[in-house]
Length: 444
Image (cartoon, rainbow, N blue to C red; front, side, top):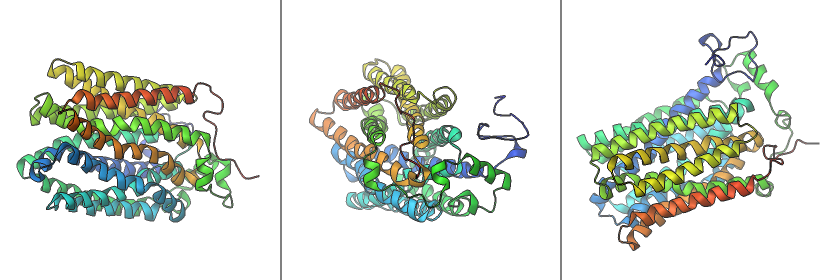
């Protein structure tokens, strides 16, 4: 805490992420906007998982059909990854990010207006396109532009932490609205703040610090001094898609994320249904468990991000491995638990570990890659995770359907994928050679 309140006269890029009120910088305002967007975005995403039992009853969905509701979102999301990266790199975060937020708010409202299963899938597809353009390209490009390298993991962790706060709020807010009125009203209520956030993003997040009317000369000079050599030259070319695909580190990150995202998507998709139908939780107890798990995830994300910057800047893969081990162990313990309390504790720990993985993971490409091509590069890496997101919920639903609703098969698949991700991480980073070195060279 003493470091965070350091009041030295000259604030360098080694300084803490947040300073005293008199030293407030515009990049902190940008971070707050990103946090608000992340919070609402994950409330929106979590709402579908929480309301799926209500929608399943109304539209008479099979387990496979329920899994497809999540997978259709992921299909659109992955389709938008490369185009979203290209759009952000070409037109800038200011316009692309704002339009993306506005578009998903519209489709969120249309989800609540769905009158049949097909209409529901179409609304979810449009919702996924909006999210896919913003995540990760707009988000990570904004963080790369507005924060020095030494602060990026902490800034990223702050955003990820509030993703879990959004999930926690969703469990309390969405289920309360659904219980008081119905599941449709919950989607309408969630759509309105997203429209306001699109306006806020447009007003406060320019394409780069030099375009901001709110940044001080001191902060602008600070960011320019901390800029990477290859990005300070405006004539430096951006990497092409083929060049990015040829980067060894990019494909390592792609593979690790692909295998880990299976549990990251399937676990929260099926956990509410598992708790209610398999473990006998009431709706209130399920919501309470999901809320606690999400708050634990927020704490885990913040802790892993801080540790990544503070102690593991050269060994970030160790935090990734720790999260993978903890997630697989806790999910296994949940299946073996014989009491509701043990199930709840295991689910909370698993959620914490899943959330903790991402700040440590994304800190690696965010530090290593040039921000000029961050939109496309992060889109390529994240595409691996989103391919898994398409497959995981639907495959889990199919496993349940073929096994007569045996959840050991469903969660066993997720645990196996997590252990495979662990194995890939160990092999990929068995040496420290060039692990955290930039993958994009400065122009000659």
